[in-house]
Image (cartoon, rainbow, N blue to C red; front, side, top):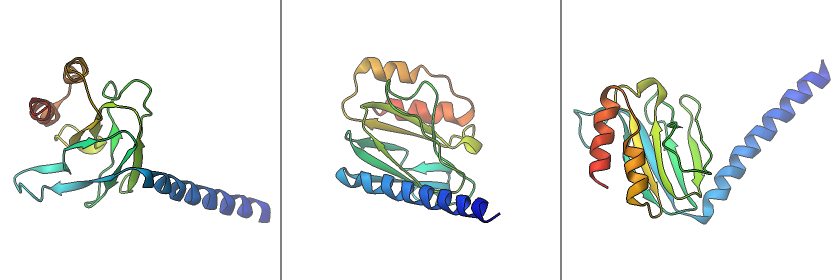
Length: 155
């Protein structure tokens, strides 16, 4: 019984130190914060949003997803992540800090509110027209489709 409790404590310490180490690794680049919100701070008519919904970052920069409102997560969208980049997924209502080292476009969604349009687009470094066209071809449902269309129109 004691050894099982000790193992649980050691795993908890390891997991906690791992997340602190990841946050410390981000000190080399700029940290961009994206808030997960039920209602936009800039446009009260917009509901279920990442704010900002577009971030231009440099390779090595970090993105900090902050769960300002409850019930949200942040995760990469299949087929909207650069080749060689690692996908990521936060736990519900938990902050996530990721360092993006691979240049390209990253499509982000909140899984529970994806169809309601809770999406974001992160551009890391220079991106070619071909990469933009390929990412814009990815099919989305509900309001996510319209919001991505607006984001791509701005690139």
